[in-house]
Image (cartoon, rainbow, N blue to C red; front, side, top):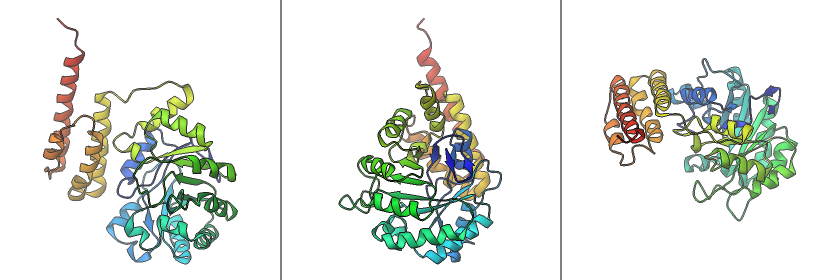
Length: 332
């Protein structure tokens, strides 16, 4: 798949998710098969660029592949400045956020709130595209609410003003993350424009990815929540798309290695105090199918020491492995 001058390894993308797609997670998903990983949303407000949170989000040290940075805001001039700032900081693609449904973003008329104002959408796109020499992409929802699915109109504005690929989440702003994603609008958008269209929303398996690609005609898929705790989903999807064969999740031993690496990198990236706290949500996602009574997570979330977190994970997975070995041992 091609975005501007960049040929991606495949058509599978990691969706930008605030508080999730930090550098450790992006690096992990890239290694496990994502063709493009997009950074967390960065505010266009320059007053927050020097905060610890923004500085962490801007950190791309050692990352492989094309660096795509998402920016959010409602003022065309500030968005242009943010795009320039991030390109100077190493961004190779600038992604404009018009898909976030969060109230704190929408109350500033940013994110998916902008879909109500096509003229403002056009002004922002023009300002950003004219401000930088790198490809500019856009992420939207299908519309403001189910009665106002104007995704096709926004898509045409995007294409006419220089956007080089468009990701569409199959819900409206009003839907938040409730119910099921709908792909009819994405299908119409794909039929209406010629730039690459990326389908997003409820893609949690290789089979679902294939179904969505077939139905919408989209050029690729973007995985968000489906990758939380399962960063290997990209390898699974790529294998299925290439061969039609389903591959199982990694064995427990490999899942442990991936989780251990992820938690250790989070601790290192943020420092012990913040890293220990941030690691907890990732561990919860990884263990959602194993720790069904949540007893381990309850005890794990009380741990304040980085090494003790890693020790607890090691002990937990050893116990899981022992249990699994007993289940598969032949009867005497």
